[in-house]
Image 1: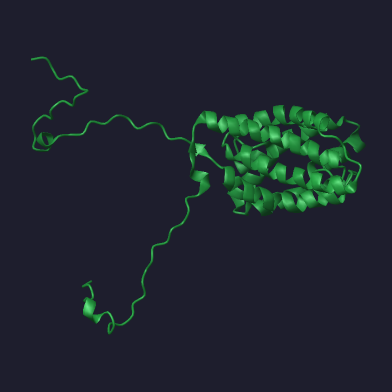
Image 2 (image 1 turned 90 degrees about the horizontal axis):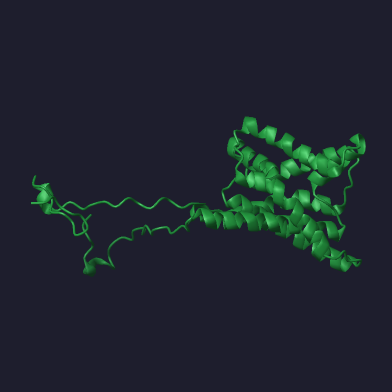
Length: 256
């Protein structure tokens, strides 16, 4: 295309200028070392347990999965902790048709969240005033979403329940928030029918945790750092003409 002379800029017809679009690089593509991702995984799992303790001390409502565990305990007499582990095992079986693979994060999820939650129950007092319990519950809900984004984004494998969410997202194309909300709502209804305790806080978790996790995962998502590129020797002009290239300063040539 010929450029328009400067003298014809006024009389020339207007043309739509195609401006380049600048899209931010997705945070999910940030490379990080294995050590960096492991630290993020551990921090996320620790904060998840603290968040659970925060919501429990608020005494407004518990998570739908805990409601389900309570309902099963009431009908079977199996201790709550054992039921929680059994539910995790059943959820892992649901990974098979979704083609999900457990990772080290999946194992650490089971091992670390419980102790950190117990530590949180010991550190966080149980307030009596509703004016304090409501903000405490809200803080725990936001912290659960942030912690989920941290340990899922570390790319060491999601927890059993979060893997079910990400598996449904990958296999069906459902948005993460919709998959998580649907799972939480179904679990809540089953737990309530079995006699689990349901509060308005439980409903808030079922409705809000999906959108919050959907926002948190891209903020903290990382990928393994690529390996360092192998050292490549640059061919000289002589090589392009069919002659052997001269040795680089760091390469010892043959003895003469």
